[in-house]
Length: 174
Image (cartoon, rainbow, N blue to C red; front, side, top):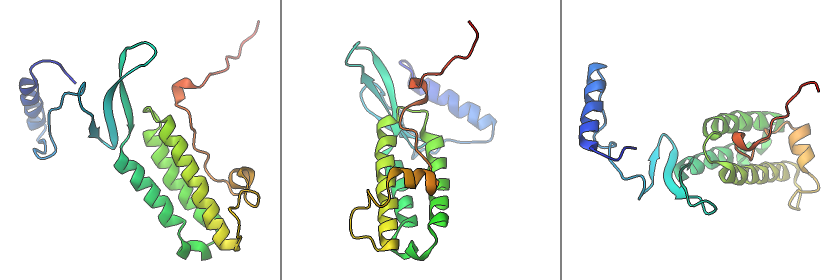
């Protein structure tokens, strides 16, 4: 994330970590030009994008493809066919734990699109689980509407907008 002498900076980082009796993993450590290529770090993909309206460049920080695959696999594992014998409250509770933790970690990046996709995937998987459990033949949208999923079952409602885009109502006297 610096323009200049990357080798000197990398050497300085190694020195500081050495003083703390820590070391860099040489296999995982690499120097990249972030303006030209994206890179993954701690589950995020970081790349520089250009705002189409203003032309200014900004860092786009989104969940990595691996992180998205992992959370979807976890949801699928919890809502699979062999768990249809479990009570729906237990399955929803376990799904809520996993999804809430994942969302809390990734919520502060530029994640609105990914959260929207995850919300759609979660709704579909829960409906599929409920259809199997109750032997419903249709897609389950009328049998298990959003109100049933979120209010009756208590499914965690994934926020689909980034926190800085939400308006805060000011309370005060005039």
